[in-house]
Length: 568
Image (tube, rainbow, N blue to C red):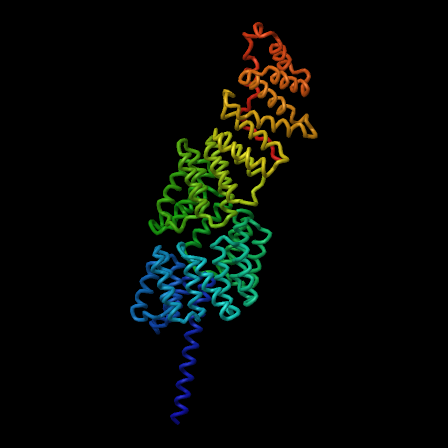
């Protein structure tokens, strides 16, 4: 009889543990679908029954972090650790909070202790540590990879799809899109229904602005799990600025599977804006601001700013955007906010420097290489439009550097030309005389702008530093198949040399030879004929006209031009 009772007790205990596990899993499912309030309610119920349920405590903390309430998450983990100080999961959770507070050394100690206590074998603990380091701004993605990859080495394979999902996240943080996609695909091979993995593949391609890949990925994520709210929202967001009717359909689907939350009301209002009812958007957003007061989502102010900008009311647009920047939390900003701010500031003279700083902030915030490059290009264009050639050159230099081996001749030319326009002649000299002619020896532009950059540094021609570059330019141009297209360039180059030989080197024969070369190209060139006659006259008779060729050089000396020669 006692034996039967013991079996029954053990059976009840196992059933109870399974029930707790199932309840935690249900909470995690809500969290997976970004139904944060439902997840919180589920974990709160579990902890009301058993305050020492470590899994429930950990995942409630993760839910609170997702709900942007790190203060509550910190208090939760601290309280739990006071009675469960050796729980590895709680140590990992607390380490995540410390990373968020930029206490990286303290966090690392927590992680190492958690690993030691779990003997480096508990995949859930290692996942928690990886999650902390990929999610937190100050986290170390390489550390996350080190720990998870080591687990794979020990077990010959990581038998946990979530681990590969986190490996993918770590690669994304390191701006390694290829590594991220490979890891996400591995996660899908282990769990073919893991919509999150397909969704995150889409996010990788989204940062590359590649709709041929990211749009199908988002659609497939929803097909894998029709209740996967993040995928549905992604599709709503994609169509928001392209087809508002499609966007509305996806938004309605999203509402059917997501928790009710204030941000849904903001999205409803933003749909009014996307429908191009800008005055209606202003009215609706202002009504929410009045209704909610200080609790209003700061994005309502941004929405009003965008609407006023569309209504060509820059003053009110700036007023509301300033309020948005004053009220929004640091983690709430996106790169596009700073781009909009830069463009709006440009409409008010005297704010150009602040506008360019906004672009700098946007670039720093964007985590994707493609996104950064796009913003850098926009910043360069903005600087050009503002007449700030120095900043244009600065940004184009950053573009060239970030592209690395993928940089084109156009990228190098634009950077060099911007420096020439900015009067950074020494830098332009280095770019064209060294980099461009070395990398593209069969193109005219390197030789041309090398010579011009040298000439700009020697306006009196006394140093003669542009002579050899102009000779190289002529030698290269002489090999061109269609000289008619570069006729003006050759005339200018020979004119520069004629001026140098006549006025600085005092070599009449060389000056005459250069002028004759002009006539070989343009037999009717009246100026070349005139100066040859002057130089051929006896010295005494030509004394008063000795500097004539130099004036010719002034007419042919390269000057800054707004129109850029088209690179091949």
